[in-house]
Length: 223
Image (cartoon, rainbow, N blue to C red):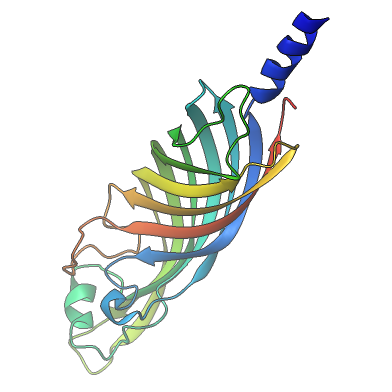
Protein backbone atom coordinates (compact mmCIF):
# COMPACT_ATOMS: atom_id res chain seq x y z
CA UNK A 1 0.00 0.00 0.00
CA UNK A 2 2.84 2.36 0.87
CA UNK A 3 4.46 1.65 -2.50
CA UNK A 4 1.21 2.46 -4.31
CA UNK A 5 0.83 5.77 -2.44
CA UNK A 6 4.46 6.69 -3.12
CA UNK A 7 4.11 5.88 -6.83
CA UNK A 8 0.91 7.93 -7.05
CA UNK A 9 2.59 10.90 -5.36
CA UNK A 10 5.52 10.84 -7.76
CA UNK A 11 3.21 10.47 -10.76
CA UNK A 12 1.02 13.36 -9.56
CA UNK A 13 4.08 15.57 -9.16
CA UNK A 14 5.20 14.70 -12.68
CA UNK A 15 1.96 15.46 -14.50
CA UNK A 16 2.43 15.83 -18.21
CA UNK A 17 2.63 19.35 -19.64
CA UNK A 18 1.17 18.20 -23.00
CA UNK A 19 -1.44 20.79 -23.92
CA UNK A 20 -3.24 22.71 -26.61
CA UNK A 21 -3.60 26.47 -26.33
CA UNK A 22 -5.39 29.40 -27.90
CA UNK A 23 -3.81 32.84 -27.86
CA UNK A 24 -5.17 36.26 -28.79
CA UNK A 25 -3.81 39.77 -28.49
CA UNK A 26 -2.46 42.84 -30.29
CA UNK A 27 0.23 42.72 -32.96
CA UNK A 28 2.29 45.18 -34.99
CA UNK A 29 4.53 44.91 -38.03
CA UNK A 30 7.96 46.49 -38.24
CA UNK A 31 8.53 47.40 -41.89
CA UNK A 32 9.60 50.13 -44.29
CA UNK A 33 6.17 51.75 -44.63
CA UNK A 34 4.51 50.90 -41.31
CA UNK A 35 5.02 54.08 -39.31
CA UNK A 36 7.70 55.60 -37.12
CA UNK A 37 8.65 53.25 -34.29
CA UNK A 38 11.02 55.79 -32.76
CA UNK A 39 8.04 58.12 -32.24
CA UNK A 40 5.70 55.23 -31.30
CA UNK A 41 3.56 55.85 -34.38
CA UNK A 42 2.37 52.52 -35.77
CA UNK A 43 -0.83 50.57 -36.32
CA UNK A 44 -1.95 47.88 -33.85
CA UNK A 45 -4.00 44.94 -35.18
CA UNK A 46 -5.17 41.62 -33.68
CA UNK A 47 -3.24 38.35 -33.85
CA UNK A 48 -4.53 34.82 -33.15
CA UNK A 49 -2.57 31.60 -32.52
CA UNK A 50 -3.34 27.93 -31.90
CA UNK A 51 -0.58 25.74 -30.47
CA UNK A 52 0.16 22.15 -29.50
CA UNK A 53 2.77 21.63 -26.80
CA UNK A 54 4.55 18.29 -26.26
CA UNK A 55 6.66 17.70 -23.15
CA UNK A 56 10.06 16.20 -24.01
CA UNK A 57 11.67 16.18 -20.56
CA UNK A 58 11.32 17.83 -17.19
CA UNK A 59 12.76 21.06 -18.60
CA UNK A 60 12.11 21.00 -22.37
CA UNK A 61 8.99 21.02 -24.55
CA UNK A 62 8.33 21.10 -28.29
CA UNK A 63 5.64 23.46 -29.52
CA UNK A 64 4.00 23.72 -32.95
CA UNK A 65 1.96 26.84 -33.74
CA UNK A 66 -0.50 27.98 -36.40
CA UNK A 67 -1.72 31.54 -36.51
CA UNK A 68 -2.72 34.69 -38.29
CA UNK A 69 -2.14 38.40 -37.85
CA UNK A 70 -3.87 41.33 -39.51
CA UNK A 71 -1.44 43.81 -41.03
CA UNK A 72 -1.92 47.51 -41.73
CA UNK A 73 0.59 50.13 -42.81
CA UNK A 74 -1.59 52.69 -41.05
CA UNK A 75 -1.39 55.41 -43.69
CA UNK A 76 1.53 57.10 -41.95
CA UNK A 77 3.21 57.79 -45.30
CA UNK A 78 0.94 59.69 -47.69
CA UNK A 79 1.16 59.86 -51.46
CA UNK A 80 2.47 63.44 -51.09
CA UNK A 81 5.62 62.30 -49.28
CA UNK A 82 8.70 63.16 -51.41
CA UNK A 83 10.01 59.59 -51.16
CA UNK A 84 6.85 58.00 -52.59
CA UNK A 85 7.61 58.74 -56.29
CA UNK A 86 11.00 57.06 -55.92
CA UNK A 87 9.43 54.02 -54.24
CA UNK A 88 6.73 53.77 -56.90
CA UNK A 89 9.24 53.96 -59.75
CA UNK A 90 10.95 50.96 -58.14
CA UNK A 91 7.65 49.05 -57.82
CA UNK A 92 7.48 49.50 -54.06
CA UNK A 93 4.36 50.21 -52.00
CA UNK A 94 3.94 53.20 -49.68
CA UNK A 95 0.96 51.72 -47.81
CA UNK A 96 -0.80 48.37 -47.53
CA UNK A 97 -3.30 46.19 -45.66
CA UNK A 98 -3.29 42.43 -45.44
CA UNK A 99 -3.04 39.31 -43.35
CA UNK A 100 -0.13 37.05 -42.44
CA UNK A 101 -0.67 33.31 -42.02
CA UNK A 102 2.15 31.51 -40.25
CA UNK A 103 3.21 28.10 -38.94
CA UNK A 104 6.28 27.18 -36.92
CA UNK A 105 7.88 24.61 -34.66
CA UNK A 106 9.86 25.68 -31.62
CA UNK A 107 11.78 24.01 -28.77
CA UNK A 108 10.81 25.58 -25.44
CA UNK A 109 12.88 25.73 -22.27
CA UNK A 110 11.15 25.95 -18.90
CA UNK A 111 13.37 27.88 -16.48
CA UNK A 112 11.72 26.70 -13.26
CA UNK A 113 10.10 23.28 -13.90
CA UNK A 114 8.29 21.36 -11.20
CA UNK A 115 10.45 19.09 -9.04
CA UNK A 116 9.00 15.67 -8.08
CA UNK A 117 7.60 15.54 -4.54
CA UNK A 118 7.90 19.30 -4.14
CA UNK A 119 5.33 22.05 -4.43
CA UNK A 120 5.80 23.82 -7.74
CA UNK A 121 6.15 27.56 -8.22
CA UNK A 122 2.96 29.55 -8.71
CA UNK A 123 4.14 30.61 -12.18
CA UNK A 124 6.49 29.16 -14.78
CA UNK A 125 8.89 31.21 -16.91
CA UNK A 126 9.76 29.97 -20.39
CA UNK A 127 11.33 30.93 -23.72
CA UNK A 128 11.64 29.38 -27.15
CA UNK A 129 13.37 29.87 -30.50
CA UNK A 130 12.31 28.04 -33.65
CA UNK A 131 11.74 28.07 -37.39
CA UNK A 132 8.61 28.66 -39.44
CA UNK A 133 7.09 29.84 -42.69
CA UNK A 134 4.63 32.67 -43.28
CA UNK A 135 2.46 33.71 -46.20
CA UNK A 136 1.33 37.33 -46.45
CA UNK A 137 -1.57 38.28 -48.71
CA UNK A 138 -2.00 42.05 -49.08
CA UNK A 139 -3.46 44.99 -50.99
CA UNK A 140 -0.75 47.57 -51.59
CA UNK A 141 -0.80 51.18 -52.76
CA UNK A 142 1.63 52.63 -55.30
CA UNK A 143 1.74 55.93 -57.18
CA UNK A 144 1.22 55.61 -60.95
CA UNK A 145 2.66 58.28 -63.29
CA UNK A 146 4.38 59.69 -60.24
CA UNK A 147 6.52 62.13 -62.27
CA UNK A 148 3.59 63.70 -64.10
CA UNK A 149 0.67 65.93 -63.16
CA UNK A 150 -1.68 62.96 -63.59
CA UNK A 151 -0.27 60.83 -60.79
CA UNK A 152 -2.86 58.52 -59.21
CA UNK A 153 -2.79 55.96 -56.44
CA UNK A 154 -3.17 52.40 -57.72
CA UNK A 155 -4.10 49.51 -55.41
CA UNK A 156 -2.94 46.04 -56.41
CA UNK A 157 -3.02 42.57 -54.88
CA UNK A 158 0.29 40.94 -53.95
CA UNK A 159 1.65 38.10 -51.82
CA UNK A 160 4.94 37.15 -50.17
CA UNK A 161 6.01 33.81 -48.71
CA UNK A 162 9.08 33.67 -46.49
CA UNK A 163 10.71 31.66 -43.75
CA UNK A 164 10.89 33.27 -40.32
CA UNK A 165 12.49 32.78 -36.92
CA UNK A 166 10.03 32.92 -33.99
CA UNK A 167 11.27 34.08 -30.58
CA UNK A 168 8.82 33.79 -27.71
CA UNK A 169 9.13 34.49 -23.98
CA UNK A 170 6.32 34.05 -21.50
CA UNK A 171 4.99 33.50 -18.02
CA UNK A 172 2.39 30.82 -17.28
CA UNK A 173 0.28 29.97 -14.27
CA UNK A 174 1.04 26.61 -12.62
CA UNK A 175 -2.24 25.67 -10.94
CA UNK A 176 -1.76 21.90 -11.27
CA UNK A 177 -5.28 21.64 -12.73
CA UNK A 178 -6.61 20.92 -16.24
CA UNK A 179 -6.27 24.56 -17.32
CA UNK A 180 -3.58 27.20 -17.13
CA UNK A 181 -3.14 30.73 -18.45
CA UNK A 182 -0.14 32.50 -19.92
CA UNK A 183 1.06 35.93 -21.04
CA UNK A 184 3.51 35.82 -23.95
CA UNK A 185 5.61 38.18 -26.07
CA UNK A 186 6.65 37.09 -29.55
CA UNK A 187 8.83 38.38 -32.38
CA UNK A 188 8.55 36.65 -35.77
CA UNK A 189 11.60 37.79 -37.76
CA UNK A 190 11.09 37.19 -41.48
CA UNK A 191 13.94 36.30 -43.82
CA UNK A 192 12.43 38.84 -46.23
CA UNK A 193 12.09 42.62 -46.12
CA UNK A 194 9.17 42.52 -48.58
CA UNK A 195 6.35 41.51 -46.21
CA UNK A 196 4.94 45.05 -46.43
CA UNK A 197 5.49 45.35 -50.21
CA UNK A 198 8.55 47.57 -49.79
CA UNK A 199 12.22 46.72 -49.32
CA UNK A 200 13.92 50.02 -50.21
CA UNK A 201 13.75 52.25 -47.16
CA UNK A 202 16.56 52.02 -44.63
CA UNK A 203 15.61 50.92 -41.14
CA UNK A 204 17.59 49.85 -38.08
CA UNK A 205 16.88 46.14 -38.63
CA UNK A 206 16.74 44.94 -42.24
CA UNK A 207 14.14 42.10 -42.05
CA UNK A 208 10.45 42.77 -41.48
CA UNK A 209 9.26 41.61 -38.05
CA UNK A 210 5.84 40.74 -36.66
CA UNK A 211 5.51 41.55 -32.96
CA UNK A 212 2.75 40.01 -30.84
CA UNK A 213 1.54 40.28 -27.26
CA UNK A 214 -0.74 37.35 -26.41
CA UNK A 215 -3.00 36.15 -23.64
CA UNK A 216 -3.13 32.34 -23.85
CA UNK A 217 -5.51 29.72 -22.45
CA UNK A 218 -4.01 26.22 -22.11
CA UNK A 219 -5.92 22.94 -21.86
CA UNK A 220 -3.85 19.94 -20.76
CA UNK A 221 -4.31 16.72 -22.71
CA UNK A 222 -3.09 13.99 -20.34
CA UNK A 223 -4.40 15.10 -16.97
